[in-house]
Length: 246
Image (cartoon, rainbow, N blue to C red; front, top):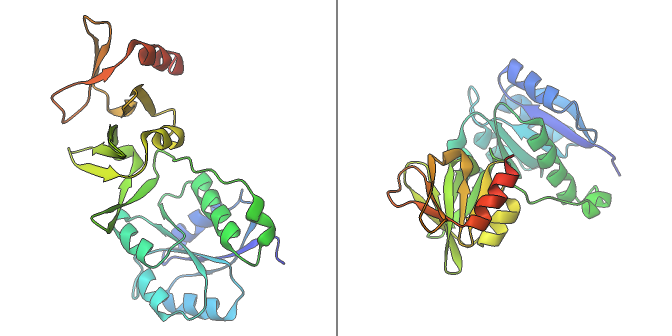
């Protein structure tokens, strides 16, 4: 039974591999056992080495990361590390464990590897480890729209409104997304430094608030982009918000 995850870094840019290796310096239960700068070199190492996880770039000279996965007949957990967010849906389709954007956040990488450890049957002692469902501001959120998988950035959410048994996400640019995640779940998982519940049916991203005005009824109008009508914030929520940011 191995105490450390064995990790292979796959990227055709030497500086990018160095950056990922540096991000792994503080991950105590992961060991880099090799690097590969091409799909061919990666395939050989995967077939000849005992690996737990590959950190895989998407766009490489020659074959892509997806081309590499099509060639493999050796089971291995995959975490994509890429500068391109448009491949996230396809990464989901090939059962990638996670999808990280460059430059790599060391904490996000550590979380992804922790998830790999929990799902690796060769390392059962880690199954009891606690796992947080909390979002980070730069995370991607997966949802299904008309049975089609979609990803969006948490930071692109302007506000979230309750919609019956669903919640409606209002995004930068005016787009919306309907999800089955409850408002309470959003409140528990979103980062407090960026999101605040201003009403029993509304959560707002404070980064996108353009103005707050007190009304005659001593409630507050909260203005956000691409919405003519303001959101309503109660006095009680306003006091809680003031306490949070002071």
